[in-house]
View 1 (cartoon, rainbow, N blue to C red):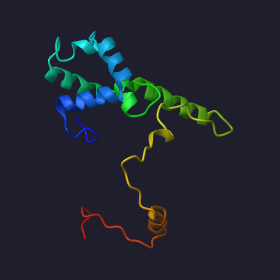
View 2: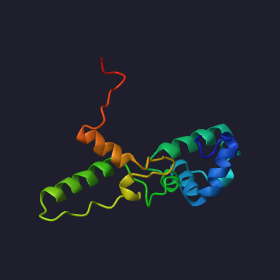
View 3: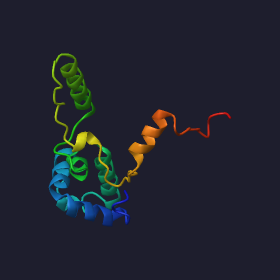
View 4: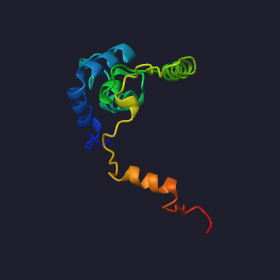
Amino acid sequence: MDRRYPSGGIVAVCEILADYKPAFTYDFRARFGLGLADIGTTVPWDEVIYLVTILLSDPTSWLQAAKADWKHPINYNWTIEAATYDLLAQVNSKRKPKPWPRPWNDAGRSTKGRRVRKDAREILRKAKDGEIEWQSKHTPT
């Protein structure tokens, strides 16, 4: 399913259920009309695995929002509306307005799982000043 649940399959679904039980329960009831008692009985496990995989990739699901540590789920229109609000607020304000609150922390720029070089700012400064020459492997020499 993903890197956090390397075992995959039924074990991964059980781990996700244990970690995010309220969101899991809500999505299964609201979207599929299924309770937890239906898992593995009314609905076979292979279908449950597919349903959970889809929920984890759907930003409108509470399960995906809980796993991503968001305050609430969103849909794609919401992101367009929030970005439009931010743009209009910047254009029409004399001061720098606060952006519309996003459900994620740090404006969606999570560094969880990613390493950032400590000297990245210095490298970018040198590149800007021309002290470092960048050559792409796709650039003809």
